[in-house]
Length: 138
Image (tube, rainbow, N blue to C red; front, side):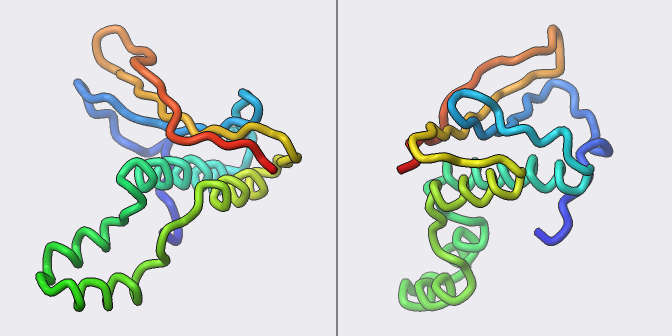
């Protein structure tokens, strides 16, 4: 993704739930809404994409596509190894995200990525939330 779409132009889809992902340090959400629109959108999209990637067992769409098109496991491994970046460690991603957002991570800090499920039909509101991963900074 070179240039994420601007969320303010996203269309409303009735009768659907949306998911948003937020990174927290010691229970406090890493602030992203005070950034310029391109940086805010990048941070929001990046958290959502990494959260979905992590929930799917750290497999990308490209890996699924290659496996569906190539039946030979040797060919699958060859192309997956050359076209994808491999697994991205949650601590490595969270450190990048926090630094890019302009926050600081100190030794002993607790870091958590949380997925929130929100509905916009009927009575709008938060439906559910759960932790995708958490760790303590060494």
